[in-house]
Length: 283
Length: 328
Image (tube, rainbow over all chains, first blue to last red; front, side):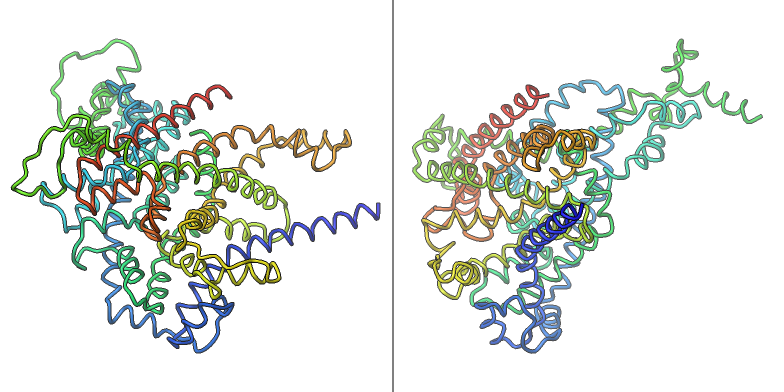
């Protein structure tokens, strides 16, 4: 009995040892960004980057880097652009993708099988592969250098349609039937009854597409030439690829860029992780 | 009274007729509202915006790419040169271009090394975070966090970790851990090592996500099975090998296949960190589309590569579907 207790104790120590080693590997790069963002002594910041001090809050700490990026390179404007672009794409995408999926999953849509096959084959096309032809197309349409060119192409997304489709197929038919008898039309049924029931999927898609849009660098680099419509991701990339690198600015803007998505994720974490895991296995 | 009202509403609701037998009114003015009560028309109303957007912004560019792949089209067509059909010349060029074969082999190399390493590490982590110990949800979040940090931020951090030479952070760490036996690598700056540097970073990025999927599968392993195995005297390894692993089979197959497909779609990390270099050692087939199409402006050639990428990924996805069906 006693030896069992001891072995369980050893077991637990082993588990924590493994967990902590893993956690260190994951936390170090994050600490590097976070602490460096607050180091205000430029020379110390750079020398720290070649030793373990990179992971420690050494030297003088303060908000100077943040003040710099907001006043000198107006990262606030990039941030604003990102919010507009990501926000509109995600919200419109939720409505458009879920309604198409609902129509496919539950309504007598003509040509349903063909549309479904089409959507599954679209899943195969990597977005980056069609970016260049798309660029030549939007150039002809005359919409480059705008918000709209960064929103419109990404609203409908085969992957999110597919996630919604799987969810809608699994909810019981009785829900809709009861509402129909109560005299509701399909639009009302969908938005008032079906979508609220599928909240975990809505949250999952919202978070996934927020991460995707917020972090995208390829498309905005291709379609924006001035700072006016440029999102934060391109702002950070520009700072990162300008030589000589101003690390204080880079880290401060990287920090600013990470916070919103992280907060969004932490708020909805529970729904997200559960439904993501279950839907990807089915997929 | 209330009952009567609902009943009366139903009379005007074609959707209800569809469910409840013979139609009462065959002809009825199609008002805006009517459209949403009829299941067939409502289906179109709901599907239309998505279908239109997908057609314009995904299907159309893809069709245009197929068309361009047979032409000598440039991204910005000089007025002195007319767009001409060149038949299969672009495709011939894809298959004879040494950079394409090098890029394809890079994708292949990436898949061969990254996929198994990711799987083993994420399985280990999943087993660890499946233990019910204090603070476990914090550890789960830490491992999962790269999935919610923008890739550009991760790339900034890793570009510093992978700094070449003695002062490079990863070099310093590995040197300390091996008591000075580790020879500093030039990581992203040496053409023989750069792809490995990318693999290290990509594995770090994606292990947490795979861990979550395996964790969900682990948690659905029936507790009775494990208890029965304990009663039968199975040790921890035997329990893992004969009880847990078979239950994880489907998730593992899913992860292996989808990360293999992901390996052939590799782009973002290359785009941000190495631009395919040094000497094409980290170029990938998707990166080539960007390089040829956007930087070199050769839209026709880039489109041919895009079509080839589509076929490669398509074949892999087809195999995936087949394997998943077979194992079900």
